[in-house]
Amino acid sequence: GIFHCTGTFMKNLGTKRLIAYRLTEPAPEIRPGVVRRQWMDDSPHRFAYRCLPLTIANSFGWELLSPVTFEATWNGGVRAEDVSLTILDGVDDAVISHFGVGVLTFHTGYLFRTEATISLMAMGPPNAPKDGIAPLVGVIETSWAPYPFTMNWRFTRPDTTIRFERGEPFCFIVPVSIGMLEGTRPELSTL
Image 1 (tube, helix red, strand yellow):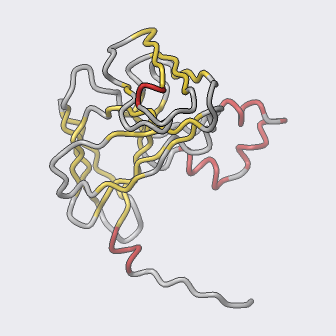
Image 2 (cartoon, one colour):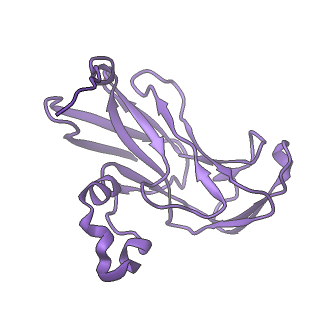
């Protein structure tokens, strides 16, 4: 039941722990980020993989995989009921319309815990655009938060049906050092 990951997240931060306490059964599978993207495979001579920043970003964290196949459509309204969901395979409470305004909510199924100086940034899988819907990004204070977080996506236009497949990444988590952000001061200069 407990996913332990120990690794060096950033140079000079040392080894930090990321623990995921399973809260639901089944809980989404967690795996290291995958470099491959279909659009990158389809680029001429797979040229997109020559962009090192893209390929590093694709695998610079962990993916949570959808435990369900579903389709959803938003009619443009502000109510939670304005998103219609059709579960095609899997548990029916893994994804819901909860907030309204075209937001789709995934339950992560875990309470994540990190050390005091580390939080988790939750976002959609990097460099994996999805037509009709966009991931929202959040930073979760996982060193103390007593509750799990959800991953949210917002429709980008009404009357478009989107689909997630079982096993498709719906959330990408990356450890971030809050102290590093506070201690960094950008400077503008000329060469």
